[in-house]
Image 1 (cartoon, rainbow, N blue to C red):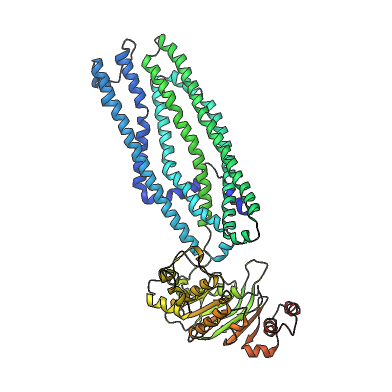
Image 2: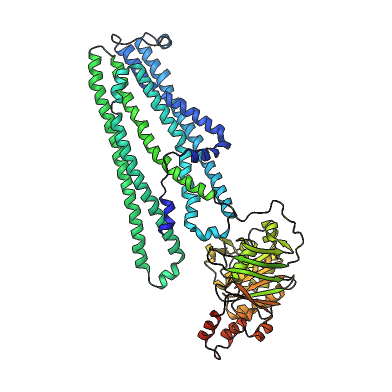
Length: 625
C-alpha cells in the first residue's frame, strides 16, 4: 500500500515552467477565447482603482472644495461646477457605468474560462483514455485501477480549476493589485508607503499559511488515496468479507482511513480559518495607520479629505487580491502535482506498437506457429522458454499443464496483449508484429475463464459494439450455445438489462454469454481459456455438443484443466514449467506414460495412485525439455 500511495504524496512545485508549457498547449485550440478572457481581466483589474478615485474627486471638488486639489484637465472640463449636477455626473455617468462594466467584464472572463476549462478537461480525459487503451496489459498489472481512475477524474478536475479560475484569475488579481498600487503612488506616495508598510506582516502570514496548507494537502491526498483503494478492494470482495464475518474489522479499518482524511481536512480548514481573518486584521491595521496619519495630514492641509478617504478604500481593496493570490498559490501547487501525475501517465511508452508498413491479412487461413518463443513477466523469472509448436488451419489444439505452466501466457502473446521477448509468433506465415493490431485481433474469438460483462443489455453484450452483427446472428449465437431458452424466459428477453459485471447472472450464464459473444463475431480462430470450468456438468455436455459444430472448419486453441473436454483434440500440447514437454493425440500421450498420463491418472484414476504422490512425481520432473 505504501508503494502505491507514494505517487499520491507528490506535492509539486508552486510553479514548474516545464509542466506549465505543456499545459498551455491544451489552450492552443481555444486561444481566441483565452485572449478575450485575458483582455477582459486586464481591463477589469484596471477599473478596480477607479471607484475610490471617483469618491476622492467628489469629496475634493464638491464637498470640501476649499482643500480640494486640481483635477486632470479632461475630467475638470467634463464635470459641472454645479455641485448637484457634478455629483450626479460622478454617480450616474462615471461610477455606476464603471460598476456595470466591471460586472460584465468579470462575467465574460469567468464564463469564457469556465468554458475553456471544460473543453480542456474534455480533451485531456479523451487523450488519457485513448492512451490507456493502447498500453500493454503489463501496465495494468503494475498500476491499481483506483489510481488510474483518479488520474482521469480527480487530477483532471484539479486542472479544470486551474484553467477555469486559476491562471487568468491570477493575472486578474495581479492587474488589480498593480492598478491600485499605481494610483496610490500617483495620488500620494507618502500615504502609499504607509499602506505598504504592513506588507512584511502579510508576507509572514502568507508564508505560514502556505506551509500549513502544503502539509495538510499532502495528508489529504494520501488519505483519499487510501480510502479509494480500500473501497475498491472491499466492495469488490464483499461476498468474501461477509462470508468470513469480517464486517466489524473492515469497518474499523475504513473508519481509521476516513478519520485520517477528516483530520487532514480539519487542519486545512483551520489554516484557511486563520489566514483570511489574519489578512483582514492586517488590512484593518493599514486602515488605522491611514486614519491616524492621513487624518493628521488632512488637518494640516498636507492632503485633501478626499485623498484620505480614497486611501482608506484603497487599503481595504489592496489586501483582497493578496488573499486571492495566496489561495491561488495552493491551487497552482495542486495543479502542478496533478499535471505531473497526468503527464507521467501520458508519457508511459506504448510498447505494443504497429509496424510502419503492416502486412495485409485479407483472407486468413488460420495457421499459427510459435517458434522458440520466450517470455518473462519479470526479468528474473521466465514463464515461457523456447516454446515451439504449430497449429494447422482448421486444427483443434489443446494446451494442458499445471497451474503456472504458462498456458494462458500463450494466448496473451498470440493476441499481443504482451510482446514476446524471444522468438516469433506467425499468423499465416506472417510475424504478428507485422500485422495491424485490429487486423490481428478481429480474427480471434476468445472465451476466458473469468468472463467479463459490461453494463447494458444481453444483446449489447453479445454484439459488443459491432454494428454488423444482426439480431438474427445474435439469436443464432445464443441458440448454438444453448442459451436462447434462458434468455427468452427473461422479462425483456435479449433486451434484459445487465448490471455491472453481470451481477444478476450466474457464473455459468455469464460464461455462456461469453461463448455467444465469440460465436456472433464468427472468428477465424477460437481461443478457449478454461472456458467450461464455470459451468455445471450438464451444461458442459450441452455446450460441448455446440462446440463440436462450432470448431468445424475453424482453427481452435483450447486451454483446459479438465482433460475430458480435449480428448478429441487434433493435437494436445503438454506444458511443464514453461517448456513444451509432450505433443500428440490423447491416446498417443497416454501411451507415452509421461506428464499427460500422470495428469490423466490424477483426474480419473486417483484410486490407483494417490493424488499427493502424483503431484510430487510431476513437480519433480526436470525443467528442461
